[in-house]
Image 1 (cartoon, helix red, strand yellow):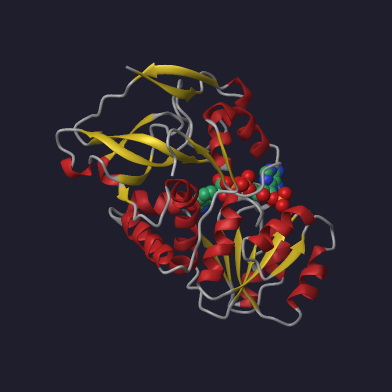
Image 2 (tube, helix red, strand yellow):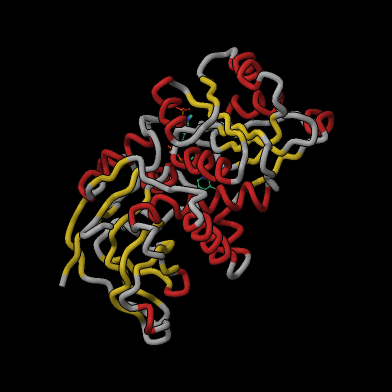
Length: 330
Ligand SMILES: NC(=O)c1ccc[n+]([C@@H]2O[C@H](COP(=O)([O-])OP(=O)(O)OC[C@H]3O[C@@H](n4cnc5c(N)ncnc54)[C@H](OP(=O)(O)O)[C@@H]3O)[C@@H](O)[C@H]2O)c1
């Protein structure tokens, strides 16, 4: 039997990805095979295809690393009662295919209320936001949060999680169209950070509010400008560098503000602490069930559309969190 999969045969432009039939995967003793229904895509997937991410996947590989679907088989040492369950899972061996191999221990069963498409949209970005705001940022209700790169997948999840935790959310993005998408996602206030004077615009938007938390997946020149607007005692959460440049913030700034710069590496956190991913996934499900967050994809795509989609993400043309829907995606 065969299944359809996207494959990267050489590092480079995502347009060179191929969609082809591959033999059905066979589970190892601790594996589960998932009939994939939805795959969430992020900026990092494009970097992987380019061979530009810090950890290179050996060629050939199936891109994508977060999915939701139904378990159709498990290995001899995996819990047999997983079969038939709808789950979300990290898929380090590739997600953009009809049948994916994952570690059974990484499968989290989904409640009925949490669709596969929503779970695939949420897995990495909502985990990162929950870990970032709750564990690293100690965000409290009533605080004001600035989300940089707010119209991307990571940014939109941050808007929803911060709002769900009772914060006032200021979304920063580079165009009116992007800012309108942020408002739709729940942002209270917006700032266009495309011009050189965006600090003044931000201060006007803040209108005396104390900015106490910055969520920063962009880096570059935006980080220092934002940090300079942070209130004393604030926290700058470093999430990523989609802008391409790693900023160097002078250390007198955190000293003078008695402020913290905190690294948010969700992947590193779950690799370092057994069971950490499950704790965050359960927290995510609790927030979904309680109606406090509402993960949604910005749009759904077919497997064949992946090469063009990843190219758009690398070219800064994407808005929100795209999900590839496969089979009977619910
Ligand atoms: N720390 C963690 O645990 C963790 C987890 C997941 C992802 N990340 C990182 O978070 C970052 C964002 O990922 P994402 O999936 O949200 O990406 P995305 O959907 O492509 O969004 C990135 C946003 O950054 C802004 N941007 C500014 N300069 C850019 C450039 N040169 N190229 C592309 N975008 C640019 C864009 O908004 P504007 O045009 O409005 O500026 C865009 O909306 C990545 O660096 C990723 O590796 C970190």
